[in-house]
Length: 156
Image (cartoon, rainbow, N blue to C red; front, side):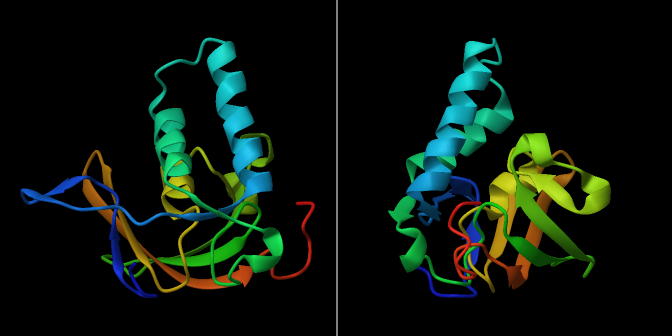
């Protein structure tokens, strides 16, 4: 299992080498709510949406832990996190939220946004890569500013 700060690749094939993705950490409460979100979207005709497929893939590999056992340096739902673009050094602060609570102007990014899905379940210090139309985006999870589980807010 990769250690804190390891490079985490978001693709299966990199320069001809198959890369095994690391399991993400997630609470059963978050996993159930995210799976329900996917089911509802599919019921209403949103089949084959890339964002839903990406999230479903993440959940399929997730390591489920109890809220009290969640490491405090993991990005969970409703976590406020400071990120840094590895290439531009731009720093960003977001709260990872469900789509209904997304508001980029308020710093609330949907778990269905590419960056939201990419960081879910990863740890402080990890560098996450994922493909974007212009190439590969690399983001380092600099610091967890607030995580509900670490703060005892298990209902969020």
